[in-house]
Length: 153
Image 1 (cartoon, rainbow, N blue to C red):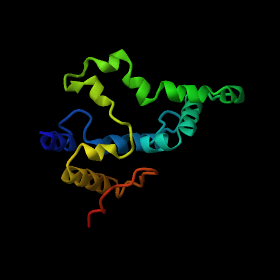
Image 2: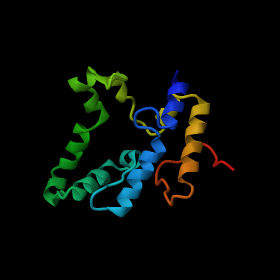
Image 3: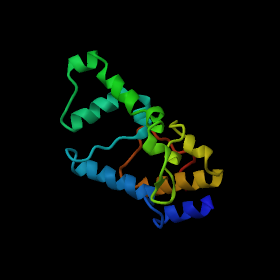
Image 4: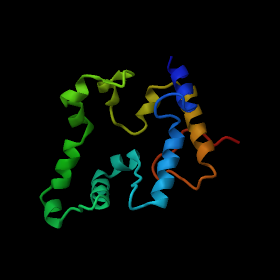
């Protein structure tokens, strides 16, 4: 079942696929319109959440003051927006995502690379190869994500 869904997703026949096209589209738009599109990687957010929250606040035109930083406002926002906090919200414990799956399925561990634990090695390899192939001539490079397979030859 998941292999079929992955294949449909990879071909753009499943909601929000193919993933590579979305990433490249938003990345290109962030280069062309840096004042309108902010491109951030989840892995970077996990690595340095404070820097990313500050960057987001600056992007939307509401940078934090030194006083707000000293009061720990950024840390409070990080805690409020954490997966642990979001998992506990009633709206995320019930309902479903467009009839495809329950909302609570959207919140797993939130750990970088954990997605590989839910897919077969062949799907992981295929995903990484698709990304490398799609991105190879784009000028795009991940700052934080590192594919798990070698680039196709």
